[in-house]
Length: 150
Image (cartoon, rainbow, N blue to C red; front, side, top):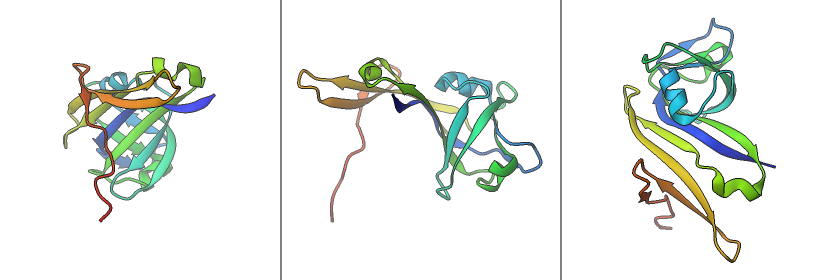
């Protein structure tokens, strides 16, 4: 079994940091559903400003609020306005990786959904993997690659 990305909220902005609440991250249920993140599911959080990386669990906030609130000790790692990445994962037998289509949701500065993407892994006849990113229309997008070695 391998730990594989199942979904991401990419570039969502922290709306509040509540040191006095007992742990977790509070998220808008609409955002969680868009990425396939469940209540009480453990997620990893990566702060794009500071590089801080933490793990905590999800609680659901008010639907439609666009909230992203770090609670308890997690509040020390992010400040309101910080763009973060929230990632859930699953354990999967490698033979099933081509069936998995992780959902990635990107955001604007006000936590409105900007894009709904998916990841895809394919296996060719020689047993080599390929990776692609698709938009909502299932069109393949450019995959980040090495630009130069100046």
